[in-house]
Image 1 (cartoon, rainbow, N blue to C red):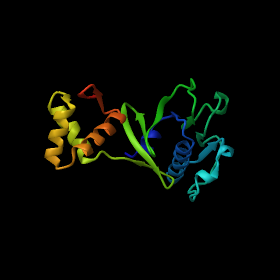
Image 2 (cartoon, one colour):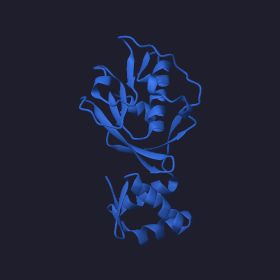
Image 3 (cartoon, one colour):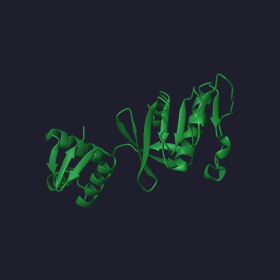
Image 4 (cartoon, helix red, strand yellow):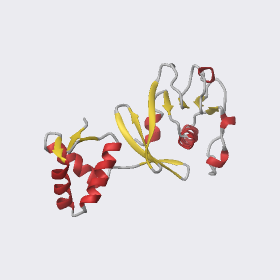
Length: 195
């Protein structure tokens, strides 16, 4: 299941300060729903700055009682209908749905917590692209798991570097990525697996 399918599994508020990310999420959601034979309706369509999305639109907007309502950049609760599929906003509203927060963790690299799982993604050419874990990322997590979830940074870096024949700096960079992704904690010189 890709990131967009997971976002659309149930009504959800995406709390994000990133206009471009919000725009791509809403447009991609509308295209996906339209491709499934549903009627996407983007509320606050007039807030879209098309220079941020210079790509072909692959859906027709159909707003009626049967529509799948996607609220773009909601600023107040009155902009959100009772029945909605997705809301993007920099604010949190009390609207009785799951809330997922988007955080920037690098240059065009974001993370979102969906149903207890941290997913990292990028925005490329108007699409959400999930960043899969690299072999090194997986090896780091496996090694931590095999050692009770805790190791020193030095031990972990030395073992992974030797095992995969990559530089220690490369392993440290991947370790930093796993930390910003919320997969591990690093305190002093100890790495802990977050379960």
